[in-house]
Figure (tube, rainbow over the protein chains, first blue to last red):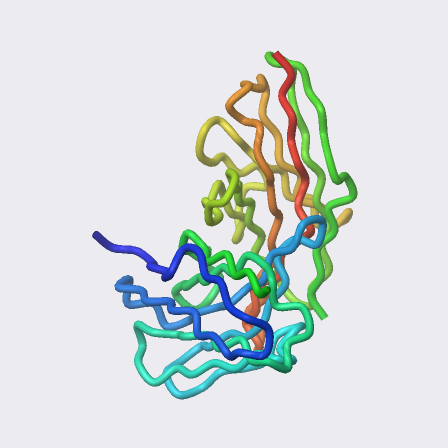
Length: 112
Length: 114
């Protein structure tokens, strides 16, 4: 099966702990993206990467970090510096240049 | 900077009636425009896109969208709504510049009333 896999689907963490969300794709896409979804605020871009070993901050990068060591993987770490980390996180990938993005099923992170 | 506006948080339509979900955009250069649908606790599913060519784009599940360059709009339409069309709809824009970001609107919740 080709596609984007996010794991886990649900994640619970205590306040002050770092947590890493996994995103893997086997579509051979160059570009990958992380979005955060909150009710009434739509999708906000956290980080994106157009190529291996390179990534750029999106609109709400503070308190998050990423790496892109392999083409198929783009993990997102939610650090303790993120003030309000509870949200639905979506990973996407696409071919570069004007094409649509394909999305994973999302990870719902709850920090207690 | 790229931006997308979806002016309606919610749209209610009776089953069988035509529906329109509005989207306007701002981008430097030629826009690449997309519509996605999201069902509860799921990722986004691609519906259709405009890259170039005919201003009326047809997509999945009977949806279509009309690109209007002078009004910088890309409204989603369907001639006859189904109850199963009830979902959250997102408009997105991508510009082929150095950044190559994909920016989404806030979403419009579509309720189809039986």
